[in-house]
Length: 410
Image (cartoon, rainbow, N blue to C red; front, side):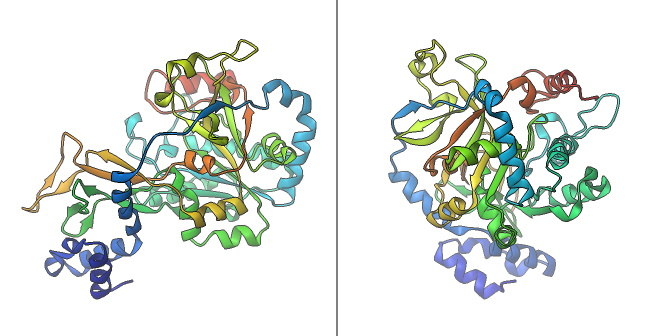
């Protein structure tokens, strides 16, 4: 743990000395809490404030990217599955679950993965994902190392829940938890905001921060020592997704490409989903709000949407390339947000308009830093049941219907 003098030197380097303004008034516990926050924060993100003012945010030239289609996969499934199973048996594949979020939008104040999606029986989101991974374990006859990224806010709840539920039958020695790195929030003048006299306003550093967080947690050495070459990263909220899918892993290995992304055909030109494409000749993701009307409606020679393959946040990355990206540093996005803060009188204020910046890294930038990416099309109804809302589109209701349609008792 750093001491006050060390903290003061760090803060002076970044012009943030105000963080220690009330230090002498704090209890010993509060002092330790504040010093520990200063120690874990990545202050280098503040350098992006100047870069943001001067940066050109115009995207490059987009072009459509084809995919290994559902039909292609069916024709080559034996070959792909065999290659994937071999990689899993030889310990070359691991999985990373991004589970730092809370179930707020579901009206649930615990980690989203703890939400019970069952109707007549208990069936938690985490349980659905572990069940899907167990299918692979049984097929391959080998355990897949699973790394679960939590947040500072939900880490204890998540780890306690897995222990209480006996890891839903997964071997505990193959499950590793790590906490996502945090970034400070700043006002529009670049000063770090405080939530209280002893607490800095911090938030997770975006879904692109999973690998740097894993490295900082000291897990990369273990991953490399175990011979892992491929990491399948996926989000917590899709209860039907296949994890460490041997067909997907095998197809990427056989393709000789550097990475892979699972995709689904868009339901309509206006569906609000990011699309896997090329940007300046490199793999990339164009967000739905960045697409022009021409891009949304463009047809290819088959009369299908040219930009048709929507991403579902299920990617396969090569460990060596991830290390290279980490060394080069991921782009940091500066986002305007409404951030609760402590005012000059020591009172907590909850603003109604954006009052500062948060810093995020995005997994889509990780895709764009790859030399190549295999778009691997999956059947939407079998692998895409996101739980983002309580009702309506991509909701608890729609996910329950899809689980039942796939023969899963809820």
